[in-house]
Length: 490
Ligand SMILES: Cc1cc2nc3c(=O)[nH]c(=O)nc-3n(C[C@H](O)[C@H](O)[C@H](O)COP(=O)(O)OP(=O)(O)OC[C@H]3O[C@@H](n4cnc5c(N)ncnc54)[C@H](O)[C@@H]3O)c2cc1C
Image (cartoon, rainbow, N blue to C red; front, side):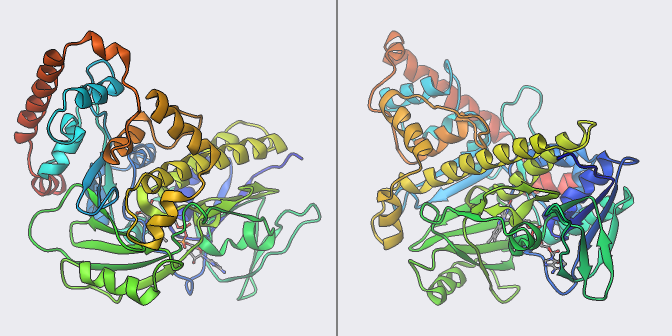
């Protein structure tokens, strides 16, 4: 059935709501009204401090100045994630946003690296990894092959986007939704607020967080549960004072007994959290483990958040489109939630800008694309767990022996048997990212690419050593991250 969208109502004022409102108010000016409704007495989730490089395009598409954004959100630059204790306790590796190097492609490089038994991790052949290890940062120029993202204060980002969306014409209505009246065709007619007001609309964007007021609540769309593969279901979060001048340009994710801990450096504080599975560790023990890891004075009481990994079966039903936590959540290991929000907004805008009434085909296209995106992202996150050699607790024994989704099992098999990094459509992570995790988890193919035999060991060794030395020398001249950040902010 076709449908018009003159009046768009966004439900919820967290990151998902204000990111959506900012884009719609900017992109649909003169074509539709955008009104955002949020309750004052229901807080936003307020975590979500680490991002992927796509956030840069998102901000740029809204015309946001980088320095202004970093000032407003206490932001810092992020080159990637350092994973500690994931393969086994005491081992670590980096996943940064850049190719691991190129002799004749990244895959040839790992082959050569193993063949000549080059000392040190493969990351030493990767510019952003060496920058991260040394605490340096420089923005990439036209010739650079790496990318970067940000860490920021999620609450301040929401306030920043709210100002921007309202400057661009979005209306802001504060009120607690108590009922969601329906239309005869099953769609949503309006939002009933506690004070008696009724907000009508043609299209409703559900950004109401884990409550999923419209899609999961009013429309009762079922939930597809991923917790067999991603069993974490809770997190303790606690910010602490920053110690020392240095601000590391990367997130740290440390595997623990029943989950993993994040460390996210901002200008004014350090974000800490412990994501865990309450099936495998007691909630209070998880809290104690987090508090023991703080590297500064706690700035608040630790906060407990609970969730289930997975997504709603459909994302767009009738005239309701869910974006953000109302549509699903994987877990924050690879900072993919804000990325999935951007992806959802992009798909929605493509449908709205097509210049015709919305149809069943728009909904189907959106739902198929979003489902695939969630499944690909799920597989990438599972890759970090299932390749572990850890067997020291129940969680690690579970994830190392569990049956994998077929899509991931096929991918891992292709890599192990043939050294092929297979990519499906709608991937969230490119071949460099998959390779970084394979390399970090020492998960290598059984056979060597025969092409490598054409290059002598000596030549390969020289090439690897030369590249490693050139990268080390170039990084040596780069400023420390906190020094560059200060310059950008001044
Ligand atoms: C532990 C944890 C760590 C995370 N870390 C990261 C990370 O590092 N990187 C990343 O990308 N993402 C991360 N995320 C995810 C990220 O926080 C969210 O994707 C993002 O903040 C979007 O949240 P949201 O806007 O969907 O929901 P929320 O922030 O929960 O907003 C919900 C909104 O709905 C409104 N609302 C609810 N009920 C009503 C009602 N009855 N009437 C009116 N309004 C209502 C609320 O007032 C609020 O404004 C993390 C999530 C968790 C749980």
